[in-house]
Amino acid sequence: MSFQQGLSGLSAAARNLDVIGNNVANSNTVGAKASRAEFADVYATSLYGAGSQYSGIGTTVAGITQQFTQGDIATTNNALDMAINGRGFFRMSNDGEVTYTRNGQFHLDKDGYLVNAQGARLTGYPADANGQVMAGVPSELRLQAGDVAPKATTGASIMVNLDARAQTPTDAFDVANGASYNGATSIAVYDAQGTERTVAVYFRKTAANAWDAYAAVDGTRVDGPGGAGSPIQTFGFDAATGKFAATSETGFPLTVPGIAAPVTFDLAKTTQFGSPFSVAELSQTGYGAGRLSGFSIASDGTVVSRYTNGKTLAQGRVVLIDFTNPQGLQPLGGNQWAETADSGAPRAGAPGAGSLGVIQSGAVEQSNVDLTAELVNMITAQRVYQANAQTIRTQDQVMQTIVNLR
Image 1 (cartoon, rainbow, N blue to C red):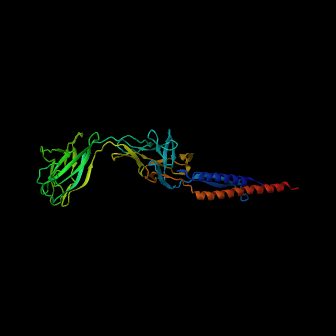
Image 2: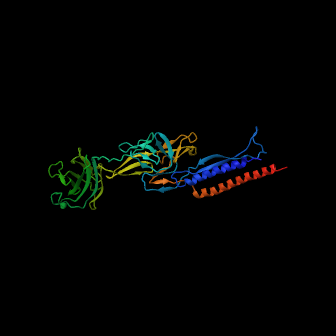
Image 3: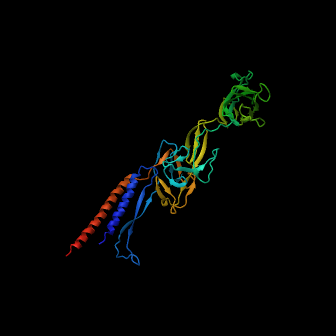
């Protein structure tokens, strides 16, 4: 008699319970992936292979494989948390050792690096001082928490509609006299030190389809090229289209204190229609100094810093890694995996590129363990263990009978 079948069954059932127990223990672990015990039967063989008269000598655990199916995505209150929706792994660096994970719980360390709970640093593509992402070899992502420097205004655009029905004012132009012009608007510009300057532009009708523009900086009138009291620009409109006449200037340069070069004001989109004066668009190229107010992460992995002056700046892009055979990765614990020969070489790319998933910020991927299924599997594994124990007991009883023969 042989106890081999029962012993192998007990061993396999115990290993299966270990796998199920590990799944249950990690059912609430962010980024954890369920494992599955895979079994194979065992036959004794002769020189010419197993014959039909052999009954088999039990079972063995052929392998324990992880199931890299998508876990549910749950939102969090941390803007630096990231969940991968689709294929891919985060690439982590710990003193040069590269590992891979699906756990997207990140925070900033004292040096500004994006790190996980174990201190490993998230890698990606860095960005230059202008926010241009430089794709190439992934490196550790470091976010700058300093202020953004101001930028002096070099140009501005004003789009208004001037009322074609307006009457020519009879009073001489005066900034303080609203009856001396037909419409006005103001726009903030910035000098080299980020100081805000207010430029007001006044529009005064002089004749049919003919207008003058006057300007003031911080309430002080700026004279035009014609000398004291002259408009900053004179222009005309095409009576048929209501747009600038072909021979008319569509803008003017304006000297603003603190800005080295004159600021070019573009009025090319201005129209003259038979409707009330209205402002459709105001824009300019400068901005003041800004303090960091927070970070956000786009679906393509771009990490963007937000500043109090309304500006945003890309500070890098998270890289995702894919493998031909993710089940070939070696588990390291701590929600980390390492590359092996069986996994294939890592393929890096931006989130959303090719077969890679996208990033969802302020969220994490929960474990893909189906707790209900695991509890049912646990009951089944327990019954299998008991049945194999019964096989050994039966073998023992048969052997005892043989021993008791006289």
